[in-house]
Length: 269
Image (cartoon, rainbow, N blue to C red):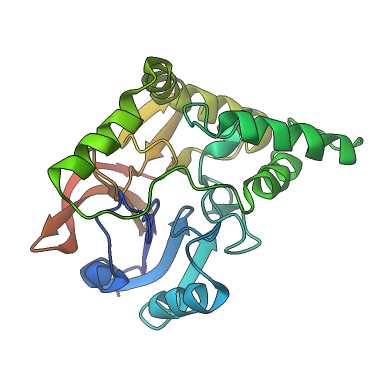
């Protein structure tokens, strides 16, 4: 009998104007044959776009199709569950959204000053908490993200003007793009260093958040970023079955998303 398939996805960004995903039904092929699904943050936007009934309906969509579903929080859905991280395979796999790697959550964001202000108010309320500890750091970060103002304009469609407006928001001011490039470069090293200090059994680290898909080695660990369903770089899924890890492209055909070709395959050490 084949080992049950565990699949990890992140950054669906359902409800976000930038996401290619408009309806969870577009994901149906990605759920076929999956025994356990981990949605690693930013599944949707609970800060302002979706109410409790809509979030419940979204969860029901997944749980009706996959026997076991874990919703991990991200900075856009900080209250979708109480789970901020997940350890699998006796701790050899560590899954977390990825914002825990950065002191200011999203260093490229226009909302960075507001996030810093909120964290400056939250941290003194926990004087004995160790900010460097993942287990205390993540809940404070999630609190800072609750009801955060919307950074993106309301959905305007897919016209040329909208695309130009989005490009302008991404590229200007120039220091925003530089901050993103620095985050892309630093994330694997930061993830490996944090795991070595606090999740030492982890040999595979799965994150999202920075929207830069890839498989990288750092500090003797493999760090996989699953990208995003928001263009332009696309998404990946991580599959675990029978002691083997496969990283696949997520392919879009006629507005439906499918598991695509394997871009990396290796045994889970």
